[in-house]
Image (cartoon, rainbow, N blue to C red; front, side, top):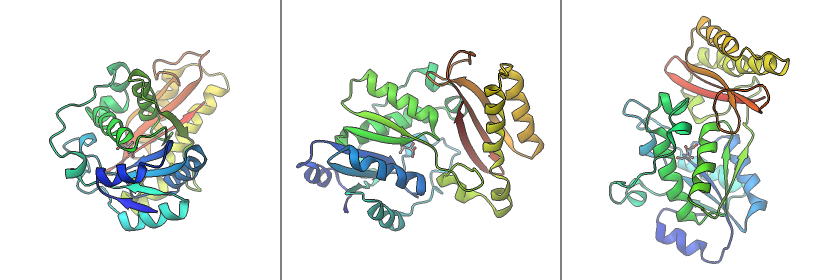
Length: 274
Ligand code: PAF
């Protein structure tokens, strides 16, 4: 695997290829990321991963400084997963001047759920993803479904700007107890880790109730919130929404239940398609 840190080197190494398949990440890779890399392999003529901890998508009180940076271990894992090229730019390389042009996603989609609790998050995500897709000349790009709203917004962005890239979503990878894999799981204490799968279980109960015909969505959401609070979590939201646009659920549309909650100081998100 080639590792490049500059745009010039990236462009040089991409010259012979017509169809880069790209997995954008912020590093600290887990099995979910590596599954994306393996899924990317047959989609293009070169498999590219990016590692960049994007300051623009972190709020002032969020964990930008403490976000785990594990480049060495990430490289070993990417190589084993069959990645051909890693682009790991420094901040000065990707943002040589302050990024004064940013991308404002539609507030109907980006101002709700995660966007409501993390103002500016999707502006930061879209701005860097647009830039990374342009730099890597991606023709396919893969993202995990754990960040369901992010995936939807990136799909809309690519469509709105007629970008020549196919966006693919991959199912969430889970630990044996159901906890969705996330780089932030590493922040959990042993005691917190032991109860971290409650979020996934609670969403699964909601999904099960909807599948069984329960359409009292508000009641189900409130029950889920209470379950989490009773166990000492601080939930931001549990929401049953339409898969297509994350707007209010209707019984005749494909639905998804999404949740975000803080366990101690760690904020976890998860979702399940119904
Ligand atoms: O999901 C992530 O890891 C990040 O939001 C992404 C898509 C790499 C953009 O920084």
